[in-house]
Length: 389
Image 1: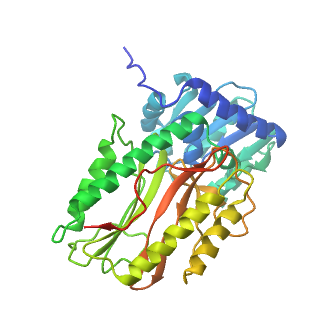
Image 2: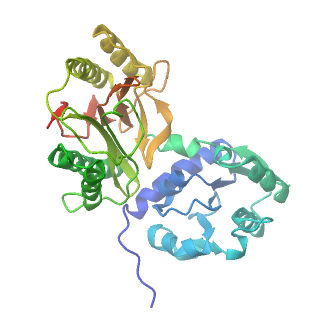
Image 3: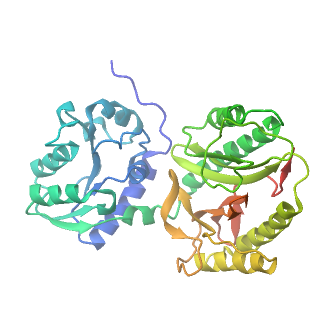
């Protein structure tokens, strides 16, 4: 007897709503069939979070079919059966002969499927930015009657406005993130190895809180003295010491959705330099959140932070944040001066205010927030302070 599916993160109606939005965009672009190859977009449209994108795979969406079809490596197909909302007949595992084959690969199986169903005579959408030039050329060669349409980032932009169900999952992820940061406050002490602290924090991110476990570890950065000027490194073999500064960035994850957070820790009294930049960052952060209302632009939010920060005598070179959701970064809107994207309710952003001033000094603080009908709602419940140990 086949094992029944486990609980799905969202009801079927949520996935059909998302598919309907994608199909409307397909109709607008006069696209008959869409090959979705971006793993995060596959997660969005099906619930699939297994890490099988290391080999060719595709979700084929047809205007003529209610459910899409997923073609992946045969050994990964059972994960799709359990995680995806579709009927198991919509999941096809291709032969191992296509893995490590110098002549053919999994995209040949995808294209054979499209050909077999006579889906290749119209307009075919591709997420070309996630495909190699060689693969795009193969598609055009094997489907000579198809007119290729570049559908890059279209699904990603649809993801920008979350449903209320997605917001709830991101809040669950945020609670896990907060728990991880509080565990950091408990475990960071002079003489403790960075790796041991990381192990304790990561364990919390996996165990979760309130009966909701973390479902993956999307990213984890622990940048401690003398490496506090770095942005994206993991723990080292070093230990914490009196006077150490520790910059942490990580996010809890639930069913692919991430709520990220950054906080700065100090073992002992923070330096005057650290206190000054912290006060300026918090003032800028609050100005940015106060600006993040429906009708404002992403550029307006960044300008509010930058102008406030500058009044305190500081400048931030990097952007102030980005859209966040599935697998952390959504490569669409940026909280950057000049970005004209207009804020709408249930857009979600990581207001990322890390500032790496020089080779010897950096500081981090951030909030993941959503735009509401009136203002911005930060997901974290932690204070915006330097955590002193």
